[in-house]
Length: 483
Ligand code: ADP
Image (cartoon, rainbow, N blue to C red):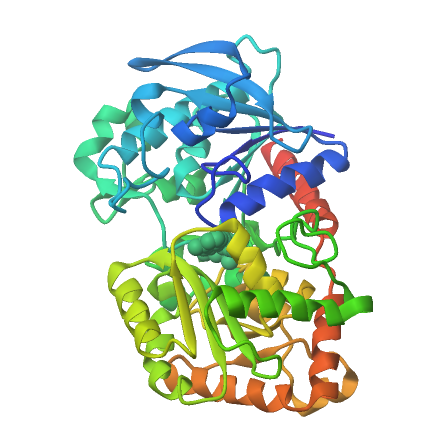
């Protein structure tokens, strides 16, 4: 099996801002089970260093204009070797990976991830004295976009795969920053890293990688349209023969109500009644009336337009009049946070809003809710609907990206066939969301139908095995293309 260097800017459980970290924390483990020799590489951010105190320095790199060292350890809870690019000036600081504590992008992000790309390139080429050389480099999102670009300049190089987790984030910077990044001048230009006069990191992946994929088949189609291609649809269509979609898997070691360590009471389809204890805890914790028969809707995620928070706000005046409870956990755009908290203050019997980030509460919302709402405007894959299916928490989703690929609507036919797993709506906007919630409440009021929906969802299997085999095949394709 080929040696794989897996380059990524966040990984669970070391550091996480979203689904990318879940992906990076579980695919390498599944690849290892398929006997791949996988090495993970990510920046040594401050919170990561705090968890890696015992890791040893295994290499020192002289990079253009600066030095970095490589720390080695195992990704916690796994046997996957993990390398940290330790360059304190760029990564050892308070705040998040991409933003400072107040949510503003770090002003030197271009320099930070260019340095990371230089380091990954050296590791991939075996130029670090580590006696390990990659056959394939698997790059993820714009933070690693320069890696395929830099490797393209090497005569004897590994194959490259670039995975798009979200095309809306492209790593765009003023062109004036290009010279300071120590990149070959030949990489500049329309057929290179330039995008409408700016420097685009993601173009490095889209142009130079041997293979490109995204995290669901539907999203792979959607990014070829002007609505979701962000001006890159032409380039993506041009590379259509090399673009595919592979659904993310779920790490059921972490996200399975039968063994979840963070929830109040474990349960499975065999003892579904125990789910009720989780609902009771959630209602109590959120100071909502503790009633078993009132439907409880959960939501967890970044509070940004992508996730349809504006649609939720548009529907709230009617939603709070319905017999339901809504528990929301998230953080993001300040106006959304403020508006949601305002509604929660006005309707404490209906709505409970938690601004912040909490793994524990995210698990407990999955376990304690009856339904899970994801009105996303677009959703490359989406993980929470997959978690919801396993937790018997019926997803209510917009028909887009991975949501369209993984939730089957409770139409009369699908219900009759026993295949329905959720409520799916198409239109954008508050009215469509409200209509979908009303449909869900209606189904909820017929316990046998609802139970069938829950059980059909719990039977779905999105474990990583299948998807990991697809990635393995894609690595082989990239290697063949390289030859
Ligand atoms: P995205 O990557 O676009 O944010 P995904 O659905 O792919 O969306 O993945 C989001 C992941 O991040 C899920 O595991 C979700 O539970 C988690 N998450 C998002 N916001 C929070 C939060 N405020 N607290 C805890 N977990 C969160």
